[in-house]
Length: 409
Image 1 (tube, rainbow, N blue to C red):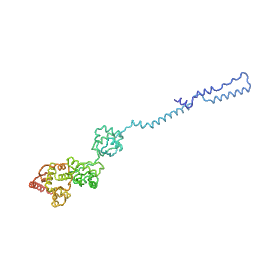
Image 2 (image 1 turned 90 degrees about the vertical axis):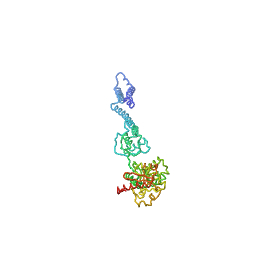
Image 3 (image 1 turned 60 degrees about the vertical axis):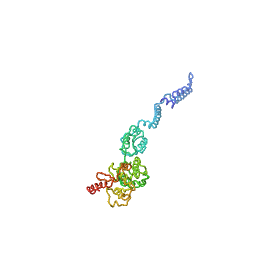
Image 4 (image 1 turned 180 degrees about the vertical axis):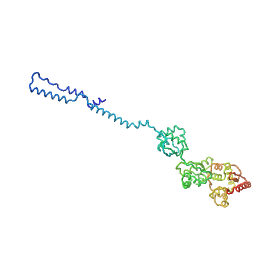
């Protein structure tokens, strides 16, 4: 290769030397015999000129060592330049074949990632890559495909680490226990304002936000028959709220649970307010599930006969207090919730009933009862009667219990 470059750059020296030598005219033969001094001098001058011409002609030998080194160096520069260009452009491609698309894990720090309702595996992968949890979507999708539980990933907020391996990230997401939520348990029978206070305590959202949200019942999914009053429709249950869930969203979820149960029981929307109001009375008056359909039947029987319900629970609601008895002054209140004075149902629910109370109100037991009384408030033992005389006997039992437990009634 070097000889080729030498020939291309410097030409074929031997051939040129031969040409010059071949083209030199032959020396004229000196005439034989003695020469004059002048002739001898002229012959000597011709000989010198001929020698100068020969010495000035291209050298017949090959290029010197330095010239060869220069040619070799030039060749290396040309070849090296090509390698450098190839390295610059091919390095990202070649490195892609060998560089892992996954972090080794286990990761560092902490980051919260939200899986939205309806997110596909690709959408989840994109979210995780954006949060620097996993290195690539490809790594996450492959890890998810290897974990059968990945199909059950639930919407919500999860706490993960940055630069986790994809398999570790999937393992976190498939376990619902890893969701970052605020757990709130609402027990049966609480008033709306009591529920607001409990929600606020657990979520940190001001009570005023719940009060404001409750003013727009239609926006919360409240049935039209409720006439904008959320009382009775805030279904008691355990809830898990994602970070940032608004007061409006929380109340909407609770109301949705009540409506769901009413729909499941076949209660038409026009009758929902009646059922929920009766259910709230049942929740307040009966402790045991087996007694609740009977209490609902007593209420319906008295309504059918146009008899005052005479329930202490409604009077206490009007007075803003909880208790199992009322005073004479309480029972003389002119509140529409005073069922000792007003005939018929109160204007609305007096609390938020649970599932068994709602079912009892929607499906009352069959029976002739017009009266009931809890003869033992400690155990919740309740007696039912169809006649006033029988009822009076049970009332006497209740009074005896109160006498034995002063300060409790």
